[in-house]
Image (cartoon, rainbow, N blue to C red):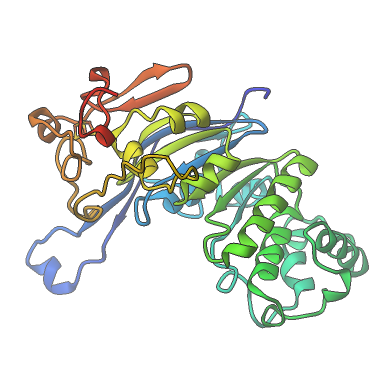
Length: 339
Ligand code: SF4
Protein backbone atom coordinates (compact mmCIF):
# COMPACT_ATOMS: atom_id res chain seq x y z
CA UNK A 1 0.00 0.00 0.00
CA UNK A 2 1.44 3.33 -1.03
CA UNK A 3 -1.24 5.91 -0.17
CA UNK A 4 -4.73 6.71 -1.38
CA UNK A 5 -5.30 6.27 -5.10
CA UNK A 6 -8.87 7.52 -4.84
CA UNK A 7 -10.35 10.05 -2.41
CA UNK A 8 -14.06 10.76 -2.28
CA UNK A 9 -15.13 13.81 -0.28
CA UNK A 10 -18.73 14.75 0.48
CA UNK A 11 -20.07 13.10 -2.67
CA UNK A 12 -23.82 13.38 -3.26
CA UNK A 13 -26.05 12.45 -6.15
CA UNK A 14 -29.59 13.79 -6.38
CA UNK A 15 -31.93 12.87 -9.21
CA UNK A 16 -34.53 15.52 -9.95
CA UNK A 17 -37.72 14.28 -11.63
CA UNK A 18 -39.18 15.90 -14.73
CA UNK A 19 -42.14 18.20 -14.10
CA UNK A 20 -45.27 17.98 -16.18
CA UNK A 21 -46.64 21.17 -17.72
CA UNK A 22 -49.60 21.02 -15.32
CA UNK A 23 -47.25 20.65 -12.38
CA UNK A 24 -45.23 23.66 -13.53
CA UNK A 25 -48.40 25.75 -13.99
CA UNK A 26 -49.51 24.79 -10.49
CA UNK A 27 -46.15 25.86 -9.12
CA UNK A 28 -45.28 22.38 -7.83
CA UNK A 29 -41.69 21.52 -7.09
CA UNK A 30 -40.09 18.58 -8.94
CA UNK A 31 -39.44 15.43 -6.91
CA UNK A 32 -35.84 14.97 -5.84
CA UNK A 33 -34.27 11.66 -4.83
CA UNK A 34 -30.99 11.87 -2.95
CA UNK A 35 -29.52 8.51 -3.93
CA UNK A 36 -26.07 9.21 -2.45
CA UNK A 37 -25.63 11.57 0.45
CA UNK A 38 -22.37 13.18 1.57
CA UNK A 39 -20.17 10.11 1.12
CA UNK A 40 -16.48 10.33 2.00
CA UNK A 41 -14.04 7.46 1.63
CA UNK A 42 -10.49 6.68 0.52
CA UNK A 43 -9.22 3.69 -1.44
CA UNK A 44 -5.57 2.85 -1.04
CA UNK A 45 -3.50 1.94 -4.06
CA UNK A 46 -3.66 -1.84 -4.53
CA UNK A 47 -6.48 -2.53 -2.10
CA UNK A 48 -10.02 -3.83 -2.47
CA UNK A 49 -12.65 -1.72 -0.75
CA UNK A 50 -15.88 -3.68 -0.44
CA UNK A 51 -19.10 -1.68 -0.57
CA UNK A 52 -22.01 -3.56 0.99
CA UNK A 53 -25.69 -2.80 1.44
CA UNK A 54 -29.19 -3.81 0.36
CA UNK A 55 -30.43 -3.42 -3.21
CA UNK A 56 -31.52 0.17 -3.80
CA UNK A 57 -29.30 1.69 -1.09
CA UNK A 58 -27.23 3.71 -3.57
CA UNK A 59 -24.15 1.48 -4.03
CA UNK A 60 -24.23 1.40 -7.83
CA UNK A 61 -25.04 5.11 -8.01
CA UNK A 62 -21.98 5.83 -5.88
CA UNK A 63 -19.79 3.71 -8.17
CA UNK A 64 -21.10 5.50 -11.24
CA UNK A 65 -20.81 8.95 -9.62
CA UNK A 66 -17.14 8.25 -8.80
CA UNK A 67 -16.55 7.56 -12.52
CA UNK A 68 -18.84 10.46 -13.52
CA UNK A 69 -21.00 8.07 -15.53
CA UNK A 70 -23.69 9.75 -13.42
CA UNK A 71 -22.65 13.35 -12.80
CA UNK A 72 -22.27 14.03 -9.02
CA UNK A 73 -24.52 16.75 -7.57
CA UNK A 74 -21.93 17.78 -4.96
CA UNK A 75 -18.55 16.75 -3.61
CA UNK A 76 -15.18 15.89 -5.03
CA UNK A 77 -13.40 12.79 -6.36
CA UNK A 78 -9.62 12.91 -6.51
CA UNK A 79 -7.92 10.17 -8.50
CA UNK A 80 -4.13 9.87 -8.32
CA UNK A 81 -3.91 13.57 -7.42
CA UNK A 82 -6.33 14.82 -10.09
CA UNK A 83 -9.71 16.30 -9.19
CA UNK A 84 -11.76 14.35 -11.72
CA UNK A 85 -14.95 16.23 -10.79
CA UNK A 86 -13.34 19.36 -12.28
CA UNK A 87 -12.27 17.75 -15.58
CA UNK A 88 -13.84 18.77 -18.89
CA UNK A 89 -15.88 16.03 -20.64
CA UNK A 90 -13.00 15.37 -23.06
CA UNK A 91 -10.44 15.15 -20.26
CA UNK A 92 -12.79 12.86 -18.30
CA UNK A 93 -13.12 10.55 -21.31
CA UNK A 94 -9.33 10.34 -21.48
CA UNK A 95 -9.15 9.68 -17.72
CA UNK A 96 -11.52 6.72 -18.10
CA UNK A 97 -8.69 4.77 -19.66
CA UNK A 98 -7.43 4.51 -16.08
CA UNK A 99 -10.83 4.24 -14.34
CA UNK A 100 -13.07 1.44 -15.55
CA UNK A 101 -16.18 -0.47 -14.56
CA UNK A 102 -17.35 -4.09 -14.74
CA UNK A 103 -21.14 -4.16 -14.86
CA UNK A 104 -23.48 -6.49 -13.01
CA UNK A 105 -25.43 -7.84 -15.94
CA UNK A 106 -23.26 -9.50 -18.59
CA UNK A 107 -26.38 -9.99 -20.76
CA UNK A 108 -27.35 -6.31 -20.91
CA UNK A 109 -23.90 -4.74 -20.99
CA UNK A 110 -22.68 -6.26 -24.29
CA UNK A 111 -23.92 -5.06 -27.69
CA UNK A 112 -25.54 -8.17 -29.25
CA UNK A 113 -24.76 -6.97 -32.79
CA UNK A 114 -21.02 -6.63 -32.23
CA UNK A 115 -18.39 -9.36 -32.22
CA UNK A 116 -16.07 -9.87 -29.27
CA UNK A 117 -13.29 -8.31 -31.37
CA UNK A 118 -15.31 -5.09 -31.64
CA UNK A 119 -16.64 -5.07 -28.05
CA UNK A 120 -13.32 -5.70 -26.33
CA UNK A 121 -11.38 -3.64 -28.90
CA UNK A 122 -13.53 -0.53 -28.59
CA UNK A 123 -11.61 0.99 -25.61
CA UNK A 124 -8.37 0.61 -27.62
CA UNK A 125 -9.89 2.75 -30.38
CA UNK A 126 -11.48 5.26 -27.98
CA UNK A 127 -8.19 5.90 -26.23
CA UNK A 128 -5.97 5.73 -29.31
CA UNK A 129 -4.22 2.59 -28.06
CA UNK A 130 -4.53 0.56 -31.25
CA UNK A 131 -2.01 0.91 -34.06
CA UNK A 132 -3.97 -0.72 -36.83
CA UNK A 133 -6.59 -3.44 -37.09
CA UNK A 134 -4.18 -6.39 -36.93
CA UNK A 135 -2.48 -5.08 -33.77
CA UNK A 136 -5.87 -4.45 -32.18
CA UNK A 137 -7.02 -8.02 -32.89
CA UNK A 138 -3.79 -9.36 -31.44
CA UNK A 139 -4.22 -7.31 -28.25
CA UNK A 140 -7.85 -8.44 -27.93
CA UNK A 141 -6.88 -12.08 -28.48
CA UNK A 142 -4.23 -11.84 -25.74
CA UNK A 143 -6.73 -10.30 -23.34
CA UNK A 144 -9.30 -13.00 -24.08
CA UNK A 145 -6.80 -15.63 -23.01
CA UNK A 146 -6.00 -13.71 -19.83
CA UNK A 147 -9.67 -13.83 -18.82
CA UNK A 148 -9.98 -17.56 -19.58
CA UNK A 149 -11.50 -17.42 -23.08
CA UNK A 150 -9.92 -18.66 -26.31
CA UNK A 151 -8.33 -16.39 -28.90
CA UNK A 152 -10.29 -18.36 -31.50
CA UNK A 153 -13.57 -17.04 -30.04
CA UNK A 154 -12.74 -13.47 -31.11
CA UNK A 155 -15.24 -13.35 -34.01
CA UNK A 156 -18.21 -14.72 -32.06
CA UNK A 157 -21.21 -12.74 -30.85
CA UNK A 158 -22.33 -12.39 -27.20
CA UNK A 159 -25.28 -14.79 -27.63
CA UNK A 160 -22.81 -17.58 -28.45
CA UNK A 161 -21.41 -17.48 -24.90
CA UNK A 162 -22.67 -18.61 -21.48
CA UNK A 163 -23.37 -16.09 -18.69
CA UNK A 164 -19.99 -16.65 -17.06
CA UNK A 165 -18.20 -16.32 -20.41
CA UNK A 166 -20.05 -13.08 -21.12
CA UNK A 167 -18.89 -11.68 -17.81
CA UNK A 168 -15.34 -12.65 -18.82
CA UNK A 169 -15.87 -10.58 -22.01
CA UNK A 170 -17.02 -7.65 -19.84
CA UNK A 171 -13.90 -8.03 -17.69
CA UNK A 172 -11.67 -8.13 -20.81
CA UNK A 173 -13.32 -4.94 -22.10
CA UNK A 174 -12.74 -3.20 -18.74
CA UNK A 175 -9.08 -4.23 -18.48
CA UNK A 176 -7.85 -3.92 -22.05
CA UNK A 177 -7.00 -0.23 -21.63
CA UNK A 178 -4.83 -1.22 -18.63
CA UNK A 179 -6.69 0.82 -15.97
CA UNK A 180 -5.44 1.40 -12.44
CA UNK A 181 -8.85 1.47 -10.78
CA UNK A 182 -11.93 -0.65 -11.47
CA UNK A 183 -15.44 -0.38 -10.04
CA UNK A 184 -16.72 -3.97 -9.89
CA UNK A 185 -20.49 -3.42 -9.70
CA UNK A 186 -22.01 -6.68 -8.40
CA UNK A 187 -19.98 -8.59 -11.02
CA UNK A 188 -21.09 -12.06 -9.86
CA UNK A 189 -24.63 -11.54 -8.58
CA UNK A 190 -26.29 -12.32 -11.94
CA UNK A 191 -24.32 -15.58 -12.31
CA UNK A 192 -24.99 -19.15 -11.17
CA UNK A 193 -23.43 -19.90 -7.80
CA UNK A 194 -21.12 -22.48 -9.42
CA UNK A 195 -19.70 -19.79 -11.73
CA UNK A 196 -19.42 -17.05 -9.10
CA UNK A 197 -16.34 -18.58 -7.43
CA UNK A 198 -14.54 -18.84 -10.80
CA UNK A 199 -15.15 -15.18 -11.62
CA UNK A 200 -14.11 -14.04 -8.13
CA UNK A 201 -10.88 -16.05 -8.47
CA UNK A 202 -10.30 -14.53 -11.92
CA UNK A 203 -10.79 -10.98 -10.56
CA UNK A 204 -8.28 -11.73 -7.78
CA UNK A 205 -5.73 -13.13 -10.26
CA UNK A 206 -6.12 -10.16 -12.62
CA UNK A 207 -5.82 -7.70 -9.73
CA UNK A 208 -2.43 -9.21 -8.89
CA UNK A 209 -1.27 -9.39 -12.52
CA UNK A 210 -2.28 -5.84 -13.45
CA UNK A 211 -1.69 -4.19 -10.01
CA UNK A 212 -5.32 -3.08 -9.85
CA UNK A 213 -7.32 -1.28 -7.18
CA UNK A 214 -10.99 -2.27 -6.83
CA UNK A 215 -14.15 -0.77 -5.44
CA UNK A 216 -16.07 -4.05 -5.15
CA UNK A 217 -19.82 -3.55 -4.81
CA UNK A 218 -21.90 -6.44 -3.50
CA UNK A 219 -25.00 -7.17 -1.46
CA UNK A 220 -23.34 -10.45 -0.37
CA UNK A 221 -21.32 -9.96 2.79
CA UNK A 222 -19.67 -13.40 2.37
CA UNK A 223 -18.15 -12.29 -0.95
CA UNK A 224 -16.91 -9.05 0.62
CA UNK A 225 -15.51 -10.93 3.62
CA UNK A 226 -13.57 -13.24 1.31
CA UNK A 227 -12.23 -10.59 -1.07
CA UNK A 228 -11.96 -7.17 0.50
CA UNK A 229 -9.24 -5.52 2.58
CA UNK A 230 -11.65 -2.92 3.96
CA UNK A 231 -15.40 -2.61 3.87
CA UNK A 232 -17.85 0.32 3.78
CA UNK A 233 -21.46 -0.35 4.77
CA UNK A 234 -24.11 1.74 3.03
CA UNK A 235 -27.67 2.41 4.13
CA UNK A 236 -30.04 4.67 2.22
CA UNK A 237 -27.27 6.59 0.46
CA UNK A 238 -24.97 7.03 3.47
CA UNK A 239 -21.91 5.18 4.74
CA UNK A 240 -22.85 4.06 8.26
CA UNK A 241 -19.71 2.07 9.08
CA UNK A 242 -16.34 1.43 7.49
CA UNK A 243 -13.07 -0.16 8.47
CA UNK A 244 -10.74 -3.14 8.01
CA UNK A 245 -12.76 -6.14 6.93
CA UNK A 246 -11.70 -8.30 9.91
CA UNK A 247 -12.68 -5.59 12.41
CA UNK A 248 -16.03 -4.77 10.83
CA UNK A 249 -17.06 -8.38 10.29
CA UNK A 250 -15.83 -9.71 13.63
CA UNK A 251 -16.99 -6.74 15.73
CA UNK A 252 -19.59 -4.75 13.82
CA UNK A 253 -20.51 -1.58 15.70
CA UNK A 254 -23.46 -0.26 13.73
CA UNK A 255 -26.80 -2.03 14.29
CA UNK A 256 -27.35 -2.23 10.51
CA UNK A 257 -24.01 -4.00 9.99
CA UNK A 258 -24.90 -6.31 12.88
CA UNK A 259 -28.19 -7.19 11.18
CA UNK A 260 -26.47 -7.90 7.85
CA UNK A 261 -23.98 -10.20 9.56
CA UNK A 262 -26.63 -11.98 11.59
CA UNK A 263 -28.24 -13.07 8.31
CA UNK A 264 -25.10 -14.92 7.16
CA UNK A 265 -25.50 -18.69 7.78
CA UNK A 266 -22.96 -20.09 10.23
CA UNK A 267 -20.88 -23.05 9.06
CA UNK A 268 -20.44 -24.78 12.44
CA UNK A 269 -23.30 -27.06 13.38
CA UNK A 270 -23.25 -25.73 16.94
CA UNK A 271 -23.03 -22.06 16.01
CA UNK A 272 -25.78 -19.82 17.31
CA UNK A 273 -27.70 -18.21 14.52
CA UNK A 274 -28.95 -15.11 16.42
CA UNK A 275 -30.52 -13.93 13.21
CA UNK A 276 -32.14 -10.53 13.44
CA UNK A 277 -34.86 -9.89 10.91
CA UNK A 278 -35.27 -6.22 10.24
CA UNK A 279 -38.86 -5.11 10.15
CA UNK A 280 -40.07 -3.21 7.10
CA UNK A 281 -38.44 -2.48 3.78
CA UNK A 282 -35.69 -0.04 2.96
CA UNK A 283 -37.47 3.35 3.19
CA UNK A 284 -37.93 5.28 -0.03
CA UNK A 285 -35.13 7.75 -0.76
CA UNK A 286 -37.95 10.02 -2.00
CA UNK A 287 -39.00 10.47 1.59
CA UNK A 288 -36.13 9.39 3.88
CA UNK A 289 -36.68 9.18 7.64
CA UNK A 290 -35.62 12.10 9.83
CA UNK A 291 -32.60 11.86 12.15
CA UNK A 292 -30.81 8.52 11.78
CA UNK A 293 -32.16 7.07 8.54
CA UNK A 294 -32.07 3.58 10.07
CA UNK A 295 -34.35 4.47 13.00
CA UNK A 296 -37.53 3.09 11.38
CA UNK A 297 -35.99 -0.42 11.37
CA UNK A 298 -33.47 -0.29 14.20
CA UNK A 299 -34.26 -2.41 17.29
CA UNK A 300 -32.09 -0.05 19.37
CA UNK A 301 -33.71 3.24 18.29
CA UNK A 302 -34.39 5.76 21.04
CA UNK A 303 -35.89 9.23 20.94
CA UNK A 304 -32.77 11.12 19.84
CA UNK A 305 -32.41 8.79 16.83
CA UNK A 306 -35.64 10.18 15.37
CA UNK A 307 -34.52 13.79 15.80
CA UNK A 308 -30.81 13.94 15.12
CA UNK A 309 -28.52 12.30 12.54
CA UNK A 310 -25.45 10.69 14.15
CA UNK A 311 -21.96 11.52 12.87
CA UNK A 312 -19.30 8.94 12.12
CA UNK A 313 -16.95 8.41 15.06
CA UNK A 314 -13.72 6.46 15.35
CA UNK A 315 -14.22 3.14 17.15
CA UNK A 316 -10.90 1.46 16.34
CA UNK A 317 -7.90 1.78 14.07
CA UNK A 318 -9.25 2.90 10.70
CA UNK A 319 -12.73 1.84 11.86
CA UNK A 320 -15.62 4.28 12.25
CA UNK A 321 -19.39 4.13 12.57
CA UNK A 322 -22.34 6.51 12.89
CA UNK A 323 -24.72 5.66 15.73
CA UNK A 324 -25.88 7.57 18.84
CA UNK A 325 -25.50 4.42 20.96
CA UNK A 326 -21.99 3.39 19.86
CA UNK A 327 -20.45 3.79 23.29
CA UNK A 328 -23.05 1.70 25.10
CA UNK A 329 -21.53 -1.49 23.60
CA UNK A 330 -24.93 -2.81 22.52
CA UNK A 331 -25.62 -5.57 20.04
CA UNK A 332 -28.95 -6.17 18.37
CA UNK A 333 -28.19 -9.89 18.14
CA UNK A 334 -28.34 -10.05 21.95
CA UNK A 335 -31.64 -8.26 22.04
CA UNK A 336 -29.95 -4.93 22.69
CA UNK A 337 -27.84 -6.06 25.66
CA UNK A 338 -24.14 -5.27 25.98
CA UNK A 339 -22.00 -7.13 23.43
FE1 SF4 B 1 -30.21 2.68 15.71
FE2 SF4 B 1 -30.25 5.08 16.85
FE3 SF4 B 1 -27.95 3.97 16.23
FE4 SF4 B 1 -29.56 4.86 14.30
S1 SF4 B 1 -28.53 6.09 15.85
S2 SF4 B 1 -28.47 2.94 14.32
S3 SF4 B 1 -31.56 4.35 15.16
S4 SF4 B 1 -29.43 3.23 17.75
